[in-house]
Image (cartoon, rainbow, N blue to C red):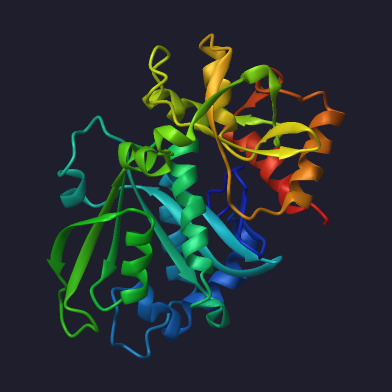
Length: 328
C-alpha cells in the first residue's frame, strides 16, 4: 500500500532555469528521509526551532506525508532535472484559520521545503511558489490562499509579499525558545490575484485593431485562465478591457501576450480589441519559433485559438512543457 497519495498534475516554469513540479510519490521517499533527517533543513520548516539535533525518522516521514497528501497536491521540485525540494497545496487544516472564513470558501495553504541547501537563496523557491499560486487559482479555482512564516524568516516574508500576499495576523510562537517570536499569517484572495495580473495602459497609448489580423504566439488557451478573465471581462465595456501587447514581426502584428483575453473578446462577439505597442526588449527569435509552430498548425488569429481551449492540466503539458523544451 502506498504511503503518499499521488496525483497526475505536472507544472512547468522557471526563468533561465527549468523548474518542474512533478507529482510526489513513494519513489521519492529516500529523498524525503534525507531532507527530513537534516536539522538545518528542519530549522526553517518547523517553526524556526532552535533544536540543532532535530531529525525525523522514516515513521515520522510516513506519518507527515501520508497524512498531508490525502488532502493536498504534493509536488517534487526539480531544477534542471535535479530534485531539490518539495511543496504542496493543501486544504486548510487549522481550525482557528478555517474559522476566519465562511464555510463555503475554498481556503488552502502552500508549504515548501528546499532540501538541497546549495539551491537556497537563488530565487528558486520564489519561482516555485509562483507556479503553485498560479495552479491554485487557475487550476483549482481556490478562493483564498492563507500561508505562514515566522517573523525571523525575512526571505520568506519578502517572498509572500512579492507575490501580493498581505499580512493579516500575528500569533505568538509557543512554546519558546524559538528563533522567532511570532508566526505571521499571509493572505491572497482570488480577486487580488486577478487584479495583480491585469494590464493598465494610458488611453493615449491604446488603439483598436481587428482580431482576425492579430497573429498569436501560442498554440493553446488554458480553460482555467479563461475562467479568471471572465471574472472581470464585461462584453459591453471596451474602456475597461485590458489591451493586448503587440509588436510587428514579418509584416504582421504579433500578440506578445494577452491571448486569453483576446479569445474571450472573440467569444463575446467582438471583431476588434484594444491593443498597445509592446516596448519591452523581448527574445524575438523565440517568438519566431512560436509563430512558426502556430502557422504549421493553422493558428493565424485568436479566432483559431478559440478552438483550442484545454483544461489547465493539459495546457501545462501541451504548451508550457513544449516551451521549456524549446531549443534556441
